[in-house]
Length: 233
Image 1 (cartoon, one colour):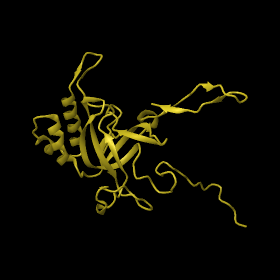
Image 2 (tube, helix red, strand yellow):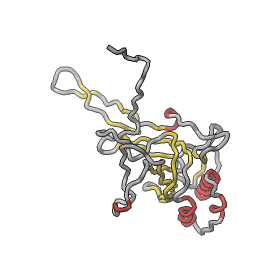
Image 3 (tube, one colour):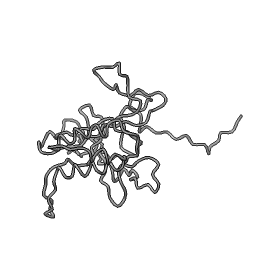
Image 4 (cartoon, helix red, strand yellow):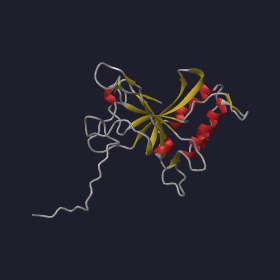
């Protein structure tokens, strides 16, 4: 009878799997990733017509093994599927909007958008192409940014998340780039010496759904039982 090697440990992990199968999920989650920008959009928020999100539509490097990505075009499936996981990543945790901070400092939406594009272009070595853009409005400027950033090379990124619950009860990620700080930067080119890329920290970079306690309800059975629970952000 052979001996069992108790020192050998098999590490199991489910973070990239979808429920009901052993396949990796077609969508990426929070964490440190190597990604590329397929396209970029400037989206008005549904609750404030003066506030916008810069959305990076990104993809990871190809996933090997038993993986099936989303269709590149649901209306034309002949274009095939994505080779990697995909995601929509907000350039900032918060929308871009004109505002006056509690300190009294005024924030210009358009200037903050331009500074964000400068930061991204410098990390991806696209500053000269960005500086060549001339536009009359910030919406027009961001439309022209599409040609600068689409189909980019792969780069490193730290993705944060605000979790939300679907009507079916699944927990999804609203992905965003954490703010740059003295701790580091959220995106960086590959193979950078003296990297300053943020190291993903779930306690810092994920705003998790918090389970809300519900009061117990009286009923005709002996004792009291909870009425169930839901979630809040």
